[in-house]
Image 1 (tube, rainbow over the protein chains, first blue to last red):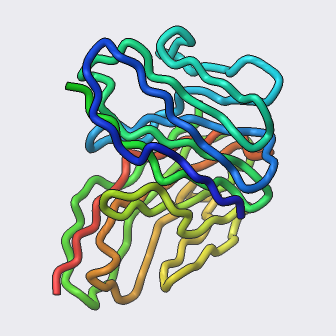
Image 2: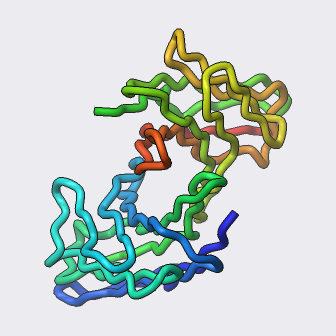
Length: 112
Length: 112
């Protein structure tokens, strides 16, 4: 299965600022996904990022707040913009392949 | 739409006790079913999966059988260890590895 390197692993940010999270995959993958896990909750899909096209956002998530880049088949970034304390969550990237789904280790974001 | 329902936790067990975490699903077609585990402070790891009816997924002593007649995929282990303490997520994906739909997660606490 693919191996994903996600960074940063954690960060504490001031409200109103932005944070960019990176995911690097050790093989080429078509589909990459970004999830949010709020404290004590399950995972919610933010968007699907496909190389060469705009990301597809789920209901309740918008590009201005969570811009995504997918410049090639091994890399993607998610930016959390104009952060507020409600954005404090774990953010995870994931890829799909014949083996199933693999997840990054997550970025634990705290907004103060 | 697709949905996953799993038993609420926390589930508290003594070491060597038997474990069952119930998971039922609603989906069109023939989804693939997964159990993921999240250890404290870490990302998600695939525990086991099943891609068609009557398949049994197994790993590290855990098992789950894809029951289409009851739309269930219950997680079982005959003898739990303290190191099994984690949050367990049941999930499904539609045909062709579309996005994952997660249950809310069940926390398992195993005491010595």
